Length: 393
Image (cartoon, rainbow, N blue to C red; front, side, top):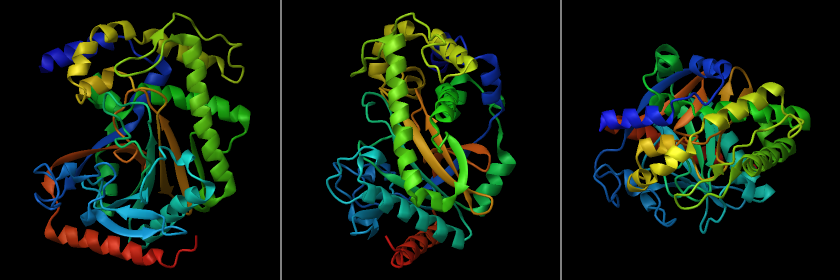
């Protein structure tokens, strides 16, 4: 099976999707696979698997064991302990009941403010505990056949923090991507499309004047400003608009259940997107030219029969525009806001995020939290809920 996987992956990704210069930058990115623990067997009483990982939300019916507390301008948000945690000091923030919103863009301005205010409070509380917070969410409404970074079709924000120990491990053990073995492993860390899309967005935002340009550094209070709210929506609309325009020019057909658009053999010309640099146009044309949807289509039955396989995730594209946003604290009173568009990645913003100058991919293993760690987790959660009581929305 391993040889079959390797041979198929190499066959379908024989050509690099990125030009040499961009691929070199991708390979120079520092990465690390960071082991994380889970809960002991039976910790969640309603878990239907022995490791408890499937105890997460089913039809938005939240297990009472996971509820931590409520917040928001009208107590319209709930904090939950995830059954499949991303870290010891982390939780998930969702809207109460009957969630129909898929992206943060779907909420009212007040609701977006409520989410981001809780995020700001979480950051301040985490730092008071000597931790390093990061806030994240994923948007991928159209991928429902294979694995997706947005595992649930409704909006949820991740509030997570690294410990001093995990920071030290990330800084000491990370290595450049070029030392990773195999294309599948490399793509699991850095989707080639993320590199291409970032320079496309950079070109677009430099012309449009939008403040949020893929990755920026700004005061943390910026996420509560009207400017950030406006820029967040502009970025979302830009990603969808550019995706649809490129799709209309270079592909035929639409995405559906195990269906994806096919290339039409055309190329982007300089006059097509006047805001796009010559180098970016060349990179885009190289990427599209080296995609091989014909061969992928021939193997469709393999993917249909293995929808949750990582091989399927690394070869069969997502069903539409998809991106992850991560907000992390950096030196001083500043934050880094990163936007990561993706075409193949099955990992959401919480499981794959950029901190301390490194791309961190979380790896769930066999280890579980000790009783002492569970006490620390509970104390942190209860402390944050108490901290939120003084928040002014």
